[in-house]
Length: 110
Image (cartoon, rainbow, N blue to C red; front, top):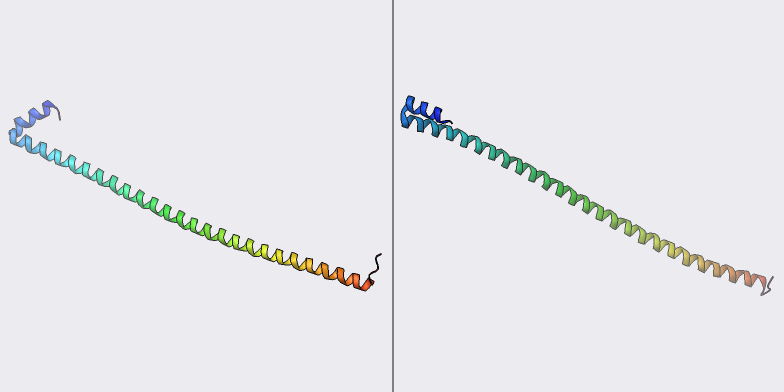
């Protein structure tokens, strides 16, 4: 508000009227400022909620990933056990076959 406008208010309304209008203008400005701050706070809350949701989803995905890796490791261990048992059985069968061949050949070597 310029000096000319203030002088006009004082002339038209007197000092008390000019102060009342100024206070009303300040009250409107404070209200707008408060609404602006409230909007910023609301935006901040919304952002925090979005970040919290993203963190929660990421955590859930991490847990699911960990469980999948555990299942994969369990599967690898079971496969290794099966392969080891098959190799031991195969070696035992090979020895039994060689014994049978030697027995049926009567100790003769070709």
